[in-house]
Length: 467
Image 1 (cartoon, rainbow, N blue to C red):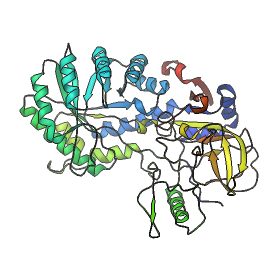
Image 2: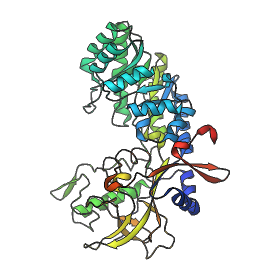
Image 3: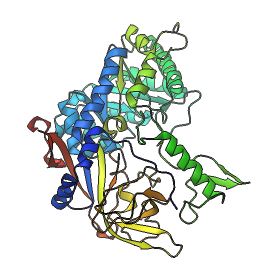
Image 4: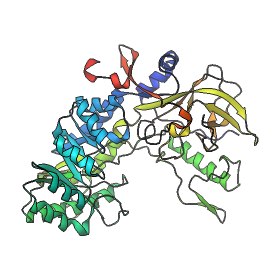
């Protein structure tokens, strides 16, 4: 069985590194397998692209790196050195940001916060993006000095119900708290985060937020910030048409109209009924080919309803509002890979070929979603021709199939051959990683292109200024 290929999109720097087989094997020899590799220079390139769009479309803006996408010290130190801000959502991330050199006025604490995180935020003197009325009340009670506060809101028409933020129907209660405690709570503005990159939906949310800002002015509050969150997409696939062809073949196999490309009863989120695969698959938006910078440009130039057709960025500038943006995935897009080695190849009882690797599914998937970009096999002497395989993990669990779908590879690898999972920096490497079976977590290493070659540095030792 040779299914359609789903090739990974690779940043040229990452592609050059993988093209240097000696460098890849040297990394594995020095740091072991499996191994997470991060590329700070790709992070810098992604940031430069977002800055260029923001410079052109927004008079005043702040970019906050969403630390939660990756625990990498190299990434957070790169962000600090670049002069942007950081969005943290735990006490540990706050400590990481401070250790990386972020001053308090460039740190924003987001997400749901218990008493411990609120007290840590107050002690550090950072901005708090309040998720709910309880947090505002706690801040007012605990604060001994004036704390900078954003109010996260939700409940926009046309948007899915969110468990985060103060619903629009309760904003007046939040304003009451902010007015009553203005000597302790310094209201910066409103914030939102939508679980979508759809420009039309974001534009509607911005319109509602501008109305809230007008209402805040009427309450003698003086907001100056509109935080539009993150959610910008990544580019995973080098061939969207091949992705679509694979998805079609996968659905056909589920329906029995072609060779099955799924393991066991896995339907990847599709509901098979009446000869049709209904619903949406449990995959990331792998078919997206629009870079984050293009999505941001579309948002900033989109006409804002009720404002004479003026662009969103222009309206913000005319109202002297600073746009805050919280990209995470967009900044680490294509800036990280995971490399593992083949342990052995076998045939299962159903005839399927299994390529066993020395890592688990949890190491390279976020929230147990399927990996729908083909791993890259760096075989020295691949056996046979193109073949379909499943990649299997090293846990003694039936569920530990790294790919629960058939993957096309050029030929069967041998024990010790490296296998690369592309674009794993955003959530994939840290969100679900487990230590079942007492397997240690993979090392994380920064890769730098320097003087025509590649230099490796343990992630915790990386310093941008020392390059």
